[in-house]
Image (tube, rainbow, N blue to C red):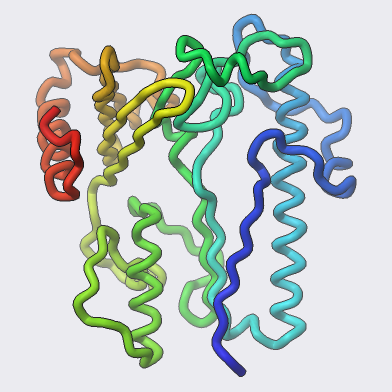
Length: 282
């Protein structure tokens, strides 16, 4: 009868993906999957990695299923809010890269996925904020509040979770301080399916100091993404996500989108000042 909060973290599907239980690997044994083409890298090398990646995801799915079944068995499912999310995306070959925002370029190594020499070679690193690096799943089950199979396409960031939890606590009469300040917004109206004014842009920052140095600042709307690389020699990026969802054509500096570039740059600089970014104005 006591309230509880349970945090269930997994390493999967983080590299090196394996080992995972046999039941998670069997569905992919010998299966040919859709994989990106990486110059100079045999397709079978990528096939092996994707089989391992999907096996790791399946292992997480199996474990989560057991947890949900236990909630049902204990009679807690109707009174428990379940939040499923990741902490970062993964490139796994797209743009010729491995991992996430601290990515490195894939090079032929026989069957080896990664070596320490690559990690320490700045020339092979590619700091990035591609969607495949920054987008994560966010699935929330709250029976009686969130309609089953509903989908929300608003711009949501991880800093929205804390104010959401505080809002829920208040909803149930819990005493929480009134003077709490959050960078994010409560998702409660969205979870209820309400039509509310919502942000039209998301802001991110990432400072990288291992293997290579990078100081990336990003603003993303539903159509546009601007990434400022504030490290020495960094190349800024601007993508039209509507017409270039794979982010293959960098439009930064293109006169035809100068007004968009200027507007996003101004908004990003203002956000840097707002959050006290030490690199604001650089």
